[in-house]
Length: 464
Image 1: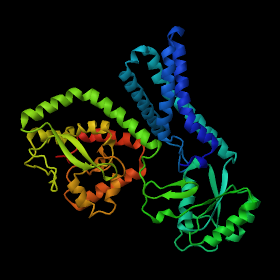
Image 2: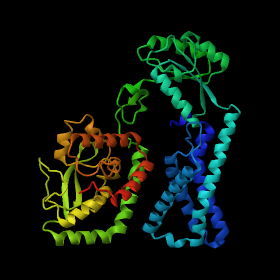
Image 3: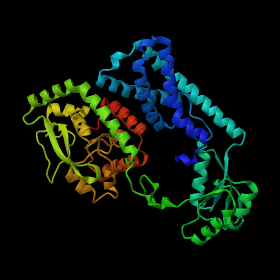
Image 4: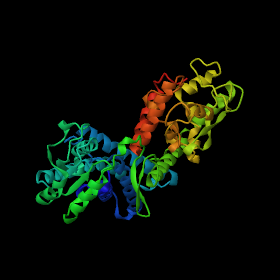
C-alpha cells in the first residue's frame, strides 16, 4: 500500500511501534536483571534489534485488516511470533559470526525473548482500538468515484475491504452506467459529471477518484478544471488491468510519470533486503551442514565413478547464463543442446543418487551459488539452457520468470510442480506459479516457501 493513502496514526504505528517495543523490552529486561557495570554491550544489541526489527516487521503488515474484521487472535500471535523469531535468528547469526554472543547474560536474553512478543501483542491491540475509535468518531476521509466502470467498481471494493486506508466511498458519478459494471456492487449513481464539483463543495469530500477511460480526455480535463476551486485531492486511475502486468508501479523520470508494467519486484531496497536474507540464510546453513556436505561428497565418490559435483549451464537473472552446482546423482553430466530430464526409474540415476534426489540433498551445493550471488534461496527453479530455449517458444511469458534470480526452491515446487515436467501442461503450471511469485514477492512469502519446502522433503513423492 502506498504510504500516502494511510492514516498518519497507522503509518506511525506500522513503522515505529514494533522496533520501539523491541527496544523498550530490552531496556526493561536489562534493568531488571543486569548490574549497571555490565550494560555496555546491550547498547549495540538494542541498535541492531531496532534496525532489524523495523525491516522484518514491516514485511508482515500486521495492521492491514480487511473485510471489516481484524485478524484472528491466533493468526496475529503466529505472525508476531514468526517475525520475532526471524529477528532473533538474524541477531544470533550476527552474534555467532562475531563471537559476541558470550558477552550477554543468558537470563537477561531469555527475559527479553519472552517479554517482547507479549508487549508487541499489547501494543498492537492498543493501536487497533485507537483506529476503531477514530472510525466511530467519523475521523475518516470521504471519497467519490467518477466513472461507473469495471475499474471504478474494483476500486470501490478494494477501498471498502482495506480498512487501514480509513476511506469511505460515498457516491458514484457518471453520465451513463457502463453496461459491463455490476450495479449491485455500486452505490446509487448520484449524478452526472457536471454535478461533481457542487457535490464536493457541499459535502466536503476529501478524495475524488477518476476512473473514466483514457479516451475521455476532454471530460477529465473539464472535471479537473472544475475542481480547482475546492480543496479536494484528485486522482486519475488508469485502467492498467487490460495488461497482464507484473509488479505494476508508478515512477517518474525527470518529473515525467511512467508506469512500470513488467518489472522485477527486487529493485531498490527490496533487492537489498533479499540479498541480506540470502547471505544470512545460506551462510548460516553452510556453517551448520558442512559435515553433512563432506559425508555426502564422500558417498558420491565411493558409490559411483565421476566427479562429486555436477555443474550445468542455466539461465539466471535477466536470462544471463550461470553455472549451477549440484551433487552428482547420475552416471552422466549432460550440458549440451540436448538435455534429457530425469524420469521415474531413470537408469541413469545411481542408487545413492536416487536417495539424494528424493530428499533434495543433491541441491545443497546451490547454497554456494546463493553466496556467489547467482542464485537465491527462493525463486523460480533454474532450467537447463536447452530446456529454456525449447519452452520459451511454446509458453507465453515463459521468460518473465527470469526477472529474479533462480532459487533453490520456489512457489511452484511447494504447490505440486516439483520433479519431471513431461508435459507442456506441467511446465505451464510451473511457470504460472513462478509468475505469481513475482507478482506477490515478500520476505514473508520466502519464509513461508522455505517452511513448506522442509515439510515436503520428508513426504514428497514427485522427486526422482
